[in-house]
Image (cartoon, rainbow, N blue to C red; front, side):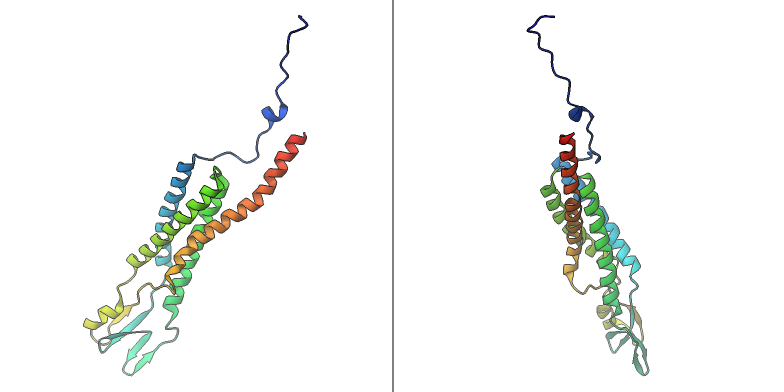
Length: 204
């Protein structure tokens, strides 16, 4: 063998044998954004349907051209209890479905869509707002008509259902808020583990 023959060093065991315990299921940035937004669109429609289905509209009666929530008798006029449970229940079911939607998408994005943390965060904010708006739209479309308008032409004693009403329209922000919260929690929990794995691999 000639003295000046250079033998290449063997490949590093770390480079060839090290595999991350976390599967790399990342996508290009634009595809990642499209996946998140599309998930929120579908999820917003489903969550809105769920909130409208789980909510039970309260009833009331018409008296002298006006609708009174909780009115159970007009001779004499008697108001039942829990006249505000319609708004409370609608707000509660909407909030639960919005938070569940945001958490599910946020966790999924943090685990599988790891191309860019900042892009993921921005996509969750925009897509979550779209999903929350779609939830509000679906609940409005599936809601009974406004009984106050129907009462003007209805006879006394007519029973009408209340419409789906929220305590505040800003509840739509529960979707992006819970999604970003889930994302940040997963990142904060996962980042130290990744650093430890990388450091341990270099030492070996």
